[in-house]
Amino acid sequence: MSRRLGIVIVVVIVIALLLVVIGNVATAHTNPPVTTTIQWDSPETEALLRAACFDCHSNETVWPWYSYVAPMSFLVAHDVEEGRSKLNFSTGHGELEGGEMAEQIEGGAMPLRIYLPLHPEANLSDTQKAQLMQGLQATFGGERD
Ligand code: HEC
Image (cartoon, rainbow, N blue to C red; front, side, top):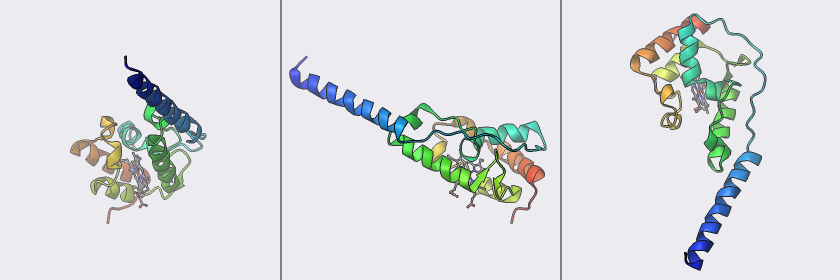
C-alpha cells in the first residue's frame, strides 16, 4: 500500500469517527415517559399509527443507527422534536384531532416523505391509509374539511 493511500484511509477513518462522536454527543436521543393512555377504536388503528407516525409523534421513538451519525442525526432529531411539538400521542400534547390527522394522510403530507425510503412499514397502501384515517376519526373524533 502506498504511503499516500495509507494517509487517505486514516483521514477517512478519523472523519467517520468524528461524525459518529458528534452524532452521539451533540444530538439528544430522548424518549421521555409515556403519560397518557389512548382508548383506540381498534388494535389495527393503533398498529398502523405506530408503524407510520410514532417515531415522530410519540415518546417511543425508535432511534435508527443513522440518527447517531452526523449530519443525519441533526435532521432526524429535528423532525422528531418538531413532530412531538405539534402532536404527541404519548402525552396527549397538541391538537389530537382525527379529521386533521386524516387530512394530512390523505394529502400525502404525513408521514413525511423523507422518512419513507428507510421505513417501508410506514409506506401504507391505499387500503391501510383508508383504514387508518377512518380509525383516527373514530378514536379522536373530528371531521375532514
Ligand atoms: C419523520 C417524522 C414524521 C412522521 C413519521 C410523521 N410526522 Fe407528522 N409531523 C412531523 C413534523 C416535523 C411536523 C411539523 C411540520 C409540518 O407540519 O410539516 C408534523 C406535523 C403533523 C401534524 C400537524 C400539521 C400542522 O400543520 O399542524 C399532523 C396532524 C401530523 N403531523 C400527523 C401525522 C400522522 C397522522 C402521521 C402518520 C401517518 C405522521 N404525522 C407521521 C413529522 C412526522
